[in-house]
Image (cartoon, rainbow, N blue to C red; front, side):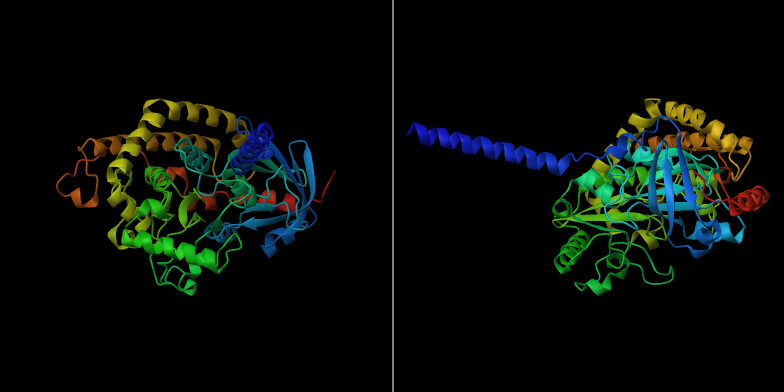
Length: 468
């Protein structure tokens, strides 16, 4: 009897230890890059060694390069220029300031930077402050939204400085492991083929049970989704559109937090706006999460560059938080409309939390002082900057004031003093006045003004070769 009891205790102890190890392995993988490249307390140094810079720019596909991050070199990584509208406009205006993707395992499986498989070097296109993307992701993280890590880096190609860049963790293998552990679900990056097509699939509208009805989702799978995975996601979309049992099929709290930040920063080049893209969709065991991506046209910038632009600063800053875009778009955005309809009180409470945590606490003011002073010496000497240092300083102050005024408007909406939906505007037209001029954050005219300095840099880069 004694032996059996003793044996049973041993079995229970071993089982408990195994369970703890399994949980730990699932939730807390060691990802060294978090404390290295994404230590955002200082500006990092990145040098790219490339044999043929002209080929890098012309091919728009991966070429082999060596990368030195601070004091560590990794040879034979994949490097390419990136972007859609930003890339085509940069080429149209004759600029050499491109954004880049770096894929550490492109040429050799298993190569990473301390667990990171891919990153973006973002050129801050239409962001004269250099701060919009970093601020957006920091706000997402402070609201508990799973989002990419960010830092700043002074970047050189073949030892020739090309400027100050935002370093962004790509939402791929390293991100999945960091956020979900070694055993994770399926990841998609929904996107349209052409804007004039029927793109309701990327809006997460239910279009039937066939996976072929969702090319904007399944053609952009980032993991190896099998037929069962696709079936699970389609069922989640069906239930979302039925607006029933939402907590079984959607991570409701996480999604509401995502929308609070998205609506605050007025990023309409996103799920919320006409394009419906620039987000990632994560599904595990039939439950979905939405993840943020591509923030450079946030803070109202997108509206000034649309085909039919909205150029009223006061109108944009006061955009109602219950209807953050127009009905013809929102009717095909069930992840927002159905969740806010079912959880409106929770959504509004989270907005109150957001304002208290980030604005009332003075966190935002402290953040701007820290970040702007840290990057200022690098902006001053940036050889490919879109604007002068004085225009950069104007953009920084504009971004800060925009956030303050947007916060005042939302607080007024929460208190019932201003319209909280577009339907309320006629009855309650009160708006928070603003002196902000959103185009000061970045506009297409800046690209034309940056031509001369970019031509000088282009000539230097095309004459360089890799150096030790």
